Image 1 (spheres, rainbow, N blue to C red):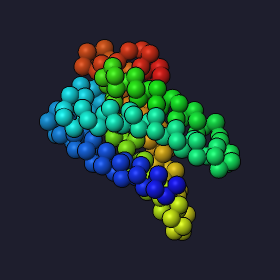
Image 2: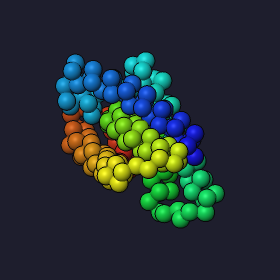
Image 3: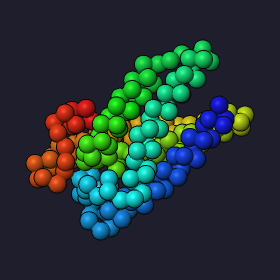
Image 4: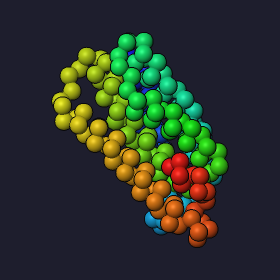
Length: 173
């Protein structure tokens, strides 16, 4: 479990850094609205690599579910529902190059960097102060609010023409 979590942690840290760099340049060069709506996120060399790798990683995260089952731990609805819906939404959104993908990907990388680092440290037998676990859980909840806010902005900006979306995309988001 330590090796698995460490691999996902390192992967997520690099993904966070690389996607945040792209998002930073988009905001500096095009403004805040572009953070959500710019199609440029999908076109650069960094995200032409990290985007598909991110989408593929959502499938690899099903291993988390397998580990829960193999260790005979309780598999809660939210766990498998989250993995199923996020993998399908990521695959579809990135393939269609819908608006908001950069926000979803970057925030998810950051949260997973913290989460998998925590899991690796715990699997190594190191005691982690309880406030760290609370911060990670709070970051996961904040991620959901950021996602909802992003979908809200996409919905409101969709008719302007620069926010590529569909009503299905907004609904599933």
